[in-house]
Image 1 (cartoon, rainbow, N blue to C red):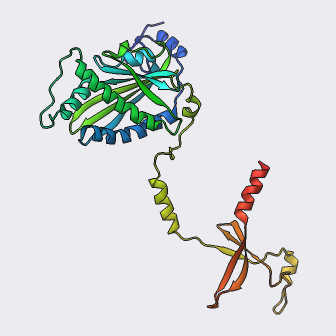
Image 2 (image 1 turned 90 degrees about the horizontal axis):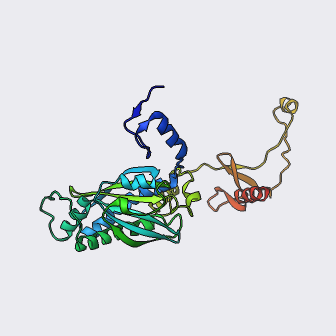
Image 3 (image 1 turned 60 degrees about the vertical axis):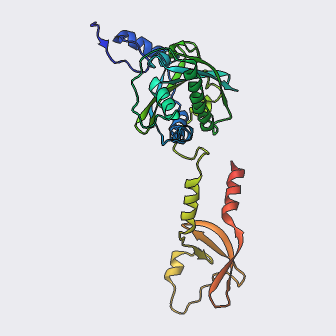
Length: 317
């Protein structure tokens, strides 16, 4: 069998022959977490406001990628050096990492120190100073605070900063082969900024995994209510056609064919008989018929049928 090499492996696979990568793929099984992906999409939208308040400058955050891979590959794949904050997730009993690129760290630091009009200088790789680490910790805590709010619909969680690492590969989050997700986000501050990565091992998400693995059809995550109010206002101004049925009689076809002008048809109803009001074929309520002072025919609701049907369906279930 010919030996061919795949040059661009994906999903955490190492370079090697097709046979070797088939074995790797068989040993790695990643279950997608649709709700987690939706959470980070919303998270990116809201994080721009947090950066704007922090740096007092318009900011935009873009979700670049969301990848599933082994924990070791997720950390090794982040360009070093990158100031990496390791945090504990309480009460989930796990860890996660936030890796800040030097471009993001120093762009934000220069802006905070008043260097808004100057062009960003290329950064020469070196060790981070104590002041830079302290500022990087505050930046990581900002990112983690917004991430806590993003996870509120799933469950309460606190991300407590534990320590800093200069290289992402030095962070110990979980066993190297443990599944993890790596999220890359781009922060733009008026043409400047950089990228930061969030790495969350599967072991950290184990408590809420059943919720995160559910499909997300695109509804309300509990953090936005504006669309609901707008929809309510739109519905309040719409029109609905109601049909009032006084009575229905079942007759044989032969009897109907024998009808002649002047025949009297007994409907079997009296003056107190109530009408059934429906909308689009759905019976809503019963109503007594009468007249208003201006002579118009009116209905007075006496019994709601929709609620009664729902109760009957619930009892049947």
